[in-house]
Image (cartoon, rainbow, N blue to C red; front, side, top):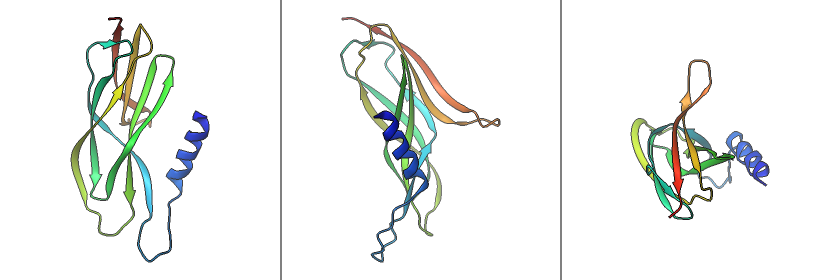
Length: 137
């Protein structure tokens, strides 16, 4: 099921919508860089924890959509997803925005959180990485 969602998401990134109703509503999805992450130092098994993510918005035509999420054992990979309306009146900006989500640990050892920050000069993905232990209360 995850693979079907991922394929659909990737397809949506390459195609845009147009309703031919005279209103310009073409858009794309973009992964935007994470700037900082605020995660508790310790998580507690089966208890919600809020995670605050700061990211960079680069256009007045971008809007927050959500988080992309992939899991590999206790390694969690996150990326901030924005939509971008395709218009001629968009302005380039450097604006820092914040969004949060709740996370509930289901493992009793630890998680390694990886938040996408962009690519380096070798086109390799870069992450803010934080290992957080999970305690049983």
